[in-house]
Length: 208
Image 1 (spheres, rainbow, N blue to C red):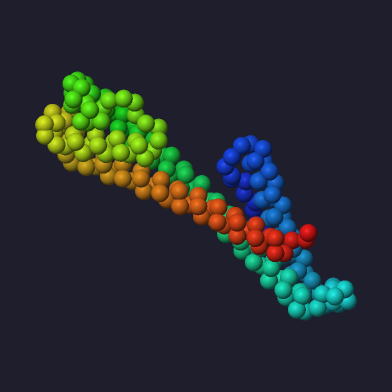
Image 2 (image 1 turned 30 degrees about the horizontal axis):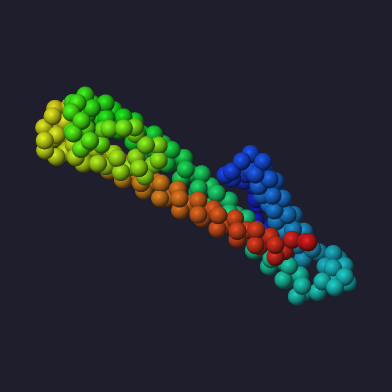
């Protein structure tokens, strides 16, 4: 049999919901481990198997039950991998976003000092607050960096250490943020799918 499966409690939502989900995760994981151990023992012990057969659990029933338990174990492990990927991608996104926002804040400070005229600031996306929303921030930063590399801004920004080559690097980092967000979102969807698969497998073989 495979090694025991460690339960995971990574879930979104309120604290009571997290607690409920963690308890359910542990319940299903424990059931999968205990059922696998029980069937492994039963199928390899002639005396216990004879008792099971005497109570109506013939080879076909035991094989069917073993298949359900094996499937459940695989789905539990699949969910854990899905949740782990979600957490890894979330951590990566947090680091990337922090870096990109810090770089943009430094750029914005220099650009605003260099171009006090309202029309210039509007063209460079330097008016208003920097949005918290990632997609809106990406749009803003892309506009700022792209337009800073164009006339009439590129000459002054080059003197301020924001030459086109550096702006291209900053734009690449912004695209990286978009990519990391997409990966996180995909992993979140995958975690939802693997949770549903696990719950379905549990329903198939759990009592009640």
